[in-house]
Length: 323
Ligand code: SER
Image (cartoon, rainbow, N blue to C red; front, side, top):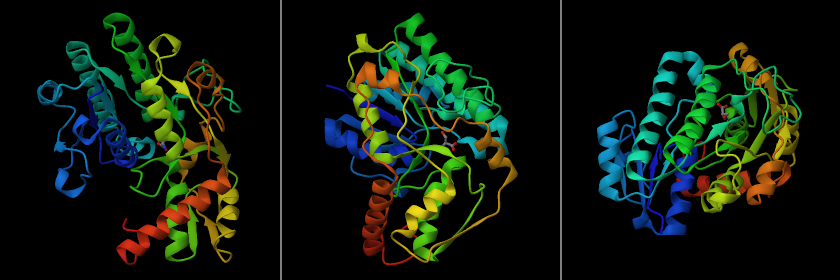
């Protein structure tokens, strides 16, 4: 039976993944950790404060909990990384190398997300193959490419059962994303409900690969369960489900909020990041090796986002659904 320690558990992915893992393996089998104190974020699973840059504390937590797996989510996302590249390098690389070292010592499996950001302007854009040029132009991308290589290295050199997925932009309503280039696709829903209008920091026709969080969470669970011998790629699998522009997302929102208005004030930093990424990933190897298949298309996602945000609004009273 798996016993899973999660780092970065208070983030956009961790908030939903922690709950799903607790449902799947039992709350006692999950230890949710984050650099933020649990009093402000913890859900149902046991939780504690942990800085993954502190190797001794990380090792101690893994041993004490008798973890069989580490799900390492703590990271600085793309736009935030460009604002302070040295900090992003320190956190993204330092955290992962500590996790892999402890996993090797304590014989734990590791799951850590990679990203569409591992690709750069030289990569074929539509679709980006599983194995192709990876020459990113962002610090986030640099740390994610190096992270994929580190996971491969710890797998072949020390036998660590490392697994990973290259996520596109993730859309969800439970917890906000923190500093990504794709965050507009979450912010736009809150703005639509709050004020009926949104000013987008990307141009109208910027097509990006995106995924609804329930598909992303299911992908993690399925990859964690996949037989090791089926996996040719360790770090990391391309996965994909939908690709849209801000203008197309606004049209899909108007099906629910007819008067919704979108304006554009592109931010050069985030526009340049978006323009350097492929618009779609070729996920055929994930489909073949562990049965990946997305469920949500744009209209289903938009309908479900409004259902979820509506429920949160009803629970929290007013404002952006408790953000
Ligand atoms: N959503 C991420 C970002 O924009 C991509 O992995 O940084």
